[in-house]
Amino acid sequence: MKFRNKRAFTVIELIVYLGVIIGILMINLMLIKVVQAGNSSETIFWHSFQSAWTRMTLNAKADDISYRVTIRKQVVIFFPMNLKRAHFDTVHEERIPVPDFIHVNQVRILIAHDDGFSAPTTIIWLGKDNNVKYYQKVQMGWSGYRVEKE
Image (cartoon, rainbow, N blue to C red; front, side, top):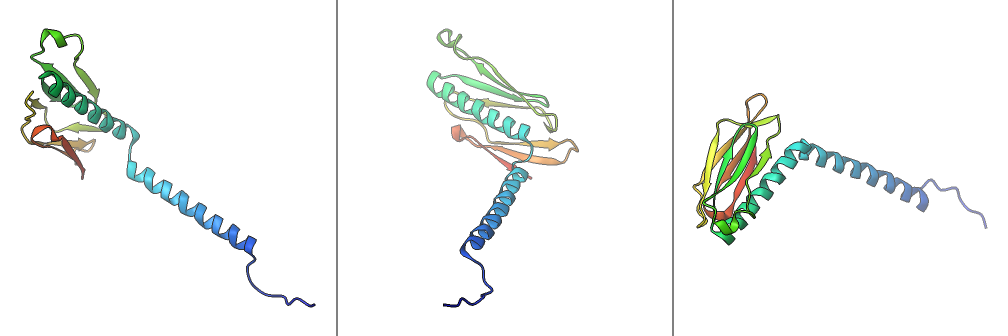
């Protein structure tokens, strides 16, 4: 029996070829994720802000505590107001440092009442070059906020 010399890929060659293509696609997908994620300290800041906001809402609902949220260029402060003596040791002020490359255009003070009402507002975050980088829209009630990147 004589075999003809065929010009085609073998199964092993196809598997290697597909492995290389899949590897290149995976590297591209990871690079896209890194580019979309942006600066890691920004991500950490927004996660910290979300965690503090969630703690504030839970404490306010559970213990009938109002909060004052002060947003400054270098720090965001979640300050409990009208604490009852029973909660004095369990609820504390929380400070979140703002990364150097973003800041608010003006100092903002939000009051989150114990009944769940917070006046709707938009906070504008600027980059180092004073261009708008984020719009943070606070909604009424404890529904939270939404951050939109410019």
